[in-house]
Length: 114
Length: 114
Image (tube, rainbow over all chains, first blue to last red; front, side, top):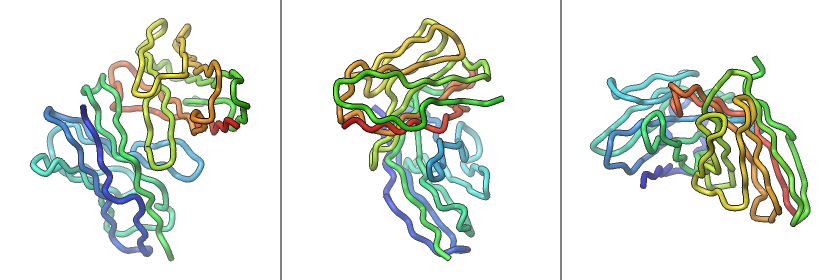
């Protein structure tokens, strides 16, 4: 069975600093990988996804993620965060391609301080 | 388009009561699913449907029933609520050809069972 591990439950960072949110997955087959963001009291919004091709994936709001097959990682990065990036971020993997189901990590709360 | 809508936003139930969480989408999406979100647990799939008349179980289906009589609606029923079902419930939908690659999430229903 596939699983997703988000290595940090909380990440505090100052405004304009860079940030990396870490995600590792376990899978013996090709995977589709996702990052979602959840702002307070809202539903989830897709930030970016990796399906195939270039291992560096760019998403919305200046975020990007790098797929590393050898390390089974899909870390999310942003070079300079804003207060408005304060949210919870979820890494997810599909367990069956586009027609599978999403397996979510436990989430990382990003707190951006002035 | 209203997207994915969920009602109610908040609900308090007593143990043993029954209720239905409503989910509707106006995007003509074939695929719909229900997740629950618990602190420190991420999102876990309860039930999903790939089209009207077709439903299947996810990771945590016990205590929940679903049916899909129309493309637009996918209600989630709690037959006898238990405190362990206190959670935030999210509904999601996507077109059949994209599956989990382009899921749209509703705003959630916060349920408390006392």
